[in-house]
Image (cartoon, rainbow, N blue to C red; front, side):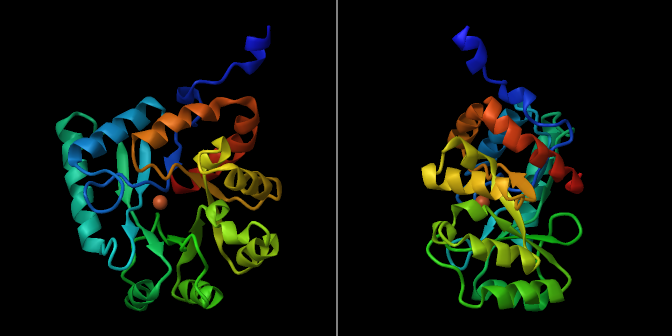
Length: 245
Ligand SMILES: [Fe+2]
């Protein structure tokens, strides 16, 4: 009897059919995600088994650590699309944007409008896990002034905000939308992150979700998403991603 109540929904039944994953690192050899084209295909295949067929993948653009440009990203996207076609996997829809670190280099790219967006105008941005940029609100303002809509990646992972929920509110009021990493709900990034994720959902502050897949470990951990509690939190949010179909 007890087992019956504990039964998890298989991961293949969690995602709606037209779910678009708007945060992942699936392009080969340009950040800390997929290393080779084989790697890319293997991650995409596994995600297809899970029921995810639409991606706007988002390589890091991060100073000298991952100095990607729109060109390096789009070249790798071509490569992956060609490989998918070769393997009769062209039913997979994959596009590319980027996950931009809010640093000086980003401000330069913003001036030049040389940025890759999710669909028309959504821009996925992240901050350091140690502290926010001093001019964060100014940057958010400039982003919108330039005609883009910022989406902050994994707000629940910025530990320095966990005891300052009013800043989350300020960010939302400043026009920033929030993208939750679905693995945060499983405790994958620790208990503090899980609690922050739950609280942000409770407060209706999460706009979209993403897998932030870098490697197979992330995909294995996704098998823990099918509990009743997590599904209840997650399902309405998964539907929000339809905006990007
Ligand atoms: Fe990411």
